[in-house]
Image (tube, rainbow, N blue to C red; front, side, top):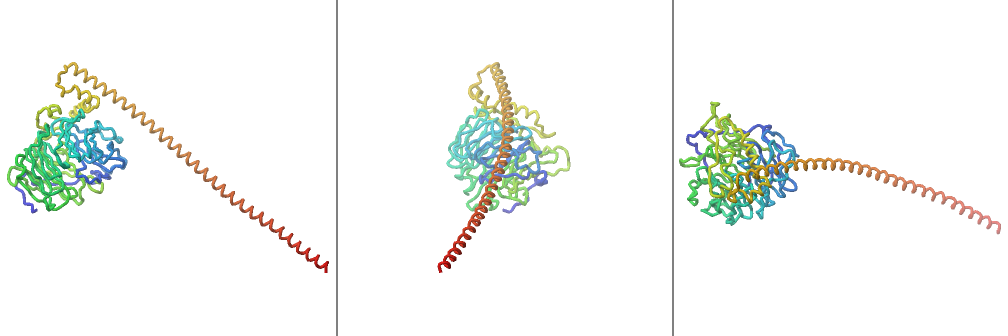
Length: 533
């Protein structure tokens, strides 16, 4: 494909710059799984990367200030029994992350502020339904604690994570689901499947609204909803050439744009920035990142530029706009995984001479607060995600406290079991006094369980210390026993050698008198013979 010079645009001179190696993350054992996933998830607090792990699946969670060479024994999130295939941070709580694995289980984890001090093996909740590996996890953009999962059993499930219950089950896919994406307000769901078709569903009822052929190639395809309702897809044609397309939901069979890119084999992941309408195409195994701008004018998808790197990429993650530096006109930040264990940080900036806040580059972006609850969403309410201005920088102190309290009440197993029977789904007929009493009881139960948790951790530490002490004592005793056994073996060998020499000496001494006696007898016989003569 020959790329033309684009028309006048404020993003025409966007360029990327990789940070120095000491400002990146090194010595990371990136997963070698062949599953088509980005292997990386980023939010303004943490960086999560799926890694190789013996005896199950795990991923590493790093605070953004922990750069440089990562220790080989760094704590992991390792509760899965099979390799982890996909991870996703909750958009409404920067401390909550979901993971899907080959062990058919989806787990939701709570990461403490500051990162992990020891390996985390206990999730907040286990979501068990799929019969085969789970390769896709996706959060709802505006509803709190609504999570979509898809597995190799061709099932798509939408969960209420707060209660651990299934809200919607979609089982109309004939083959493996490659990708899924909600639209801007979460009222529609688009999926791509191994049968080469793209489908649009009503996510509340699971009803199929439309379907069409996506790309003619047999390799994996991806589809995302754009902010204004159009659908952008990536895939392959029959000649295994990579291509992208732009479609309208009401005319899936007639692409607005269908363009061939190249003949590489890697699956292309479209990363979308809804604030600037920029799409970044990152291919697995590629050494480039292409970015395009979507506009209402033909040809609708305008090529801008390509960021070139010397090393092929194994995975990639895109920082939400809340984590970008507005003082340097940074509009995107990528975390790019290389095969040599380096997580390279790439900053995309628009050069401006002024140091003031650039309002044209930073429209209101997604906030970390949810617009509606899971119960309101499943009841039929739609709401656009909440937005806020980045002018003056992003501060998450107040929102963090609110999300932690929500997480303690909603994601806590005890409160979830209570909420399942008498929460908003049951009609909300409880009085305010009863609600206050139940909230107080839930808070006291949470405090009591946290205290018990600390006591159990202290007991575990003491037991570990005793075990280490006994192991050292056993090693010392084994060394003494081995030394004594060696001395005894040497003594036995020396005794054997001494007894053999004594026996030889005794046999030689006994043979000498016998020889002398035979000689005397022979001489006596001769003398007698002479006397007879």
